[in-house]
Image (tube, rainbow, N blue to C red; front, side, top):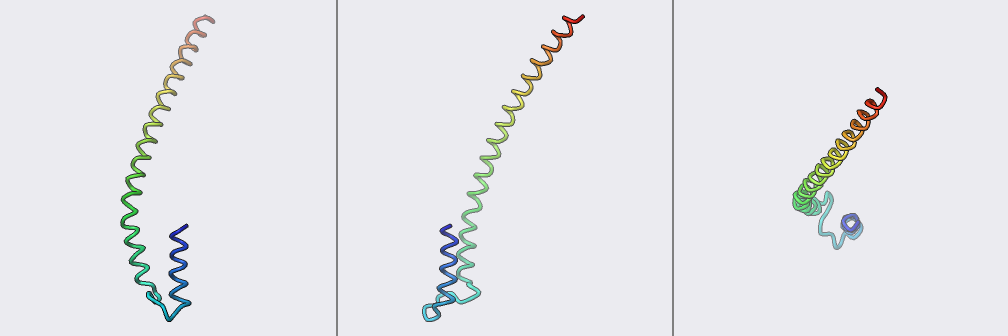
Length: 86
């Protein structure tokens, strides 16, 4: 939100206040600053994404263990039911 407001203000200032313009269109300075911000942001996002992926993998492993346990219990019950019918 703050980035959007800052960019809108930057562009508006440089378009509508020509006497105090500091970055004429095509806004090279703005582009440079946004590129620098992206260069610092992306590694942080990648690290966070890796942590989330590891947490998801752990959660799926736990779910798989519970499913195997439920299937084992169901198979035992099925074997018990089959022996009663025989």
